[in-house]
Image (cartoon, rainbow, N blue to C red; front, top):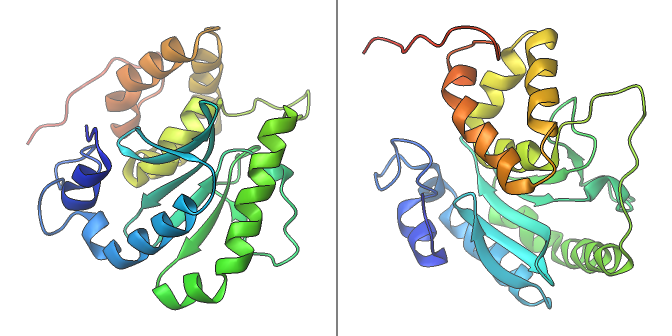
Length: 212
């Protein structure tokens, strides 16, 4: 997996077999990603690499990250549901996303046109992080753990495979991933189950590797 910003921009995130090839999604949106990166760097956030993609933090707390998908690139706000969305740029990553919100881009024109709004949302997100405010989800729902939301936001193939599962299989994974108290353990569980999810299998299904 990619470990530096420079490597990400030249080789991609390293999460799929297209990394380092001309077909990598990062190359499709290179100008847009560079522009978004420059905008975020004008704030007080710290630039890091997490899950193979550029992630921007405030005192080690995730605030926003940049990702490339097949049909768009985007900014992902980790506590986006708390942001004011008066300009209607923010949207859910998926139907079950309780916390994160994204802004999709398919050209540099939209980024330049909305630069002031984008910066305002980033600064609002920073203030939310400073305040320690948390997202409250409905008690009768099974919210997707933050670590899974973050990984799905960077991996379009895994996202499509996860939401293609039956609601029961999705819930099984969500409950399993949410159990550990430590984030690193939750991430480890997600990574170990990724092949099963990509194979369309539930948590307790016996994994069968696909034949090449």
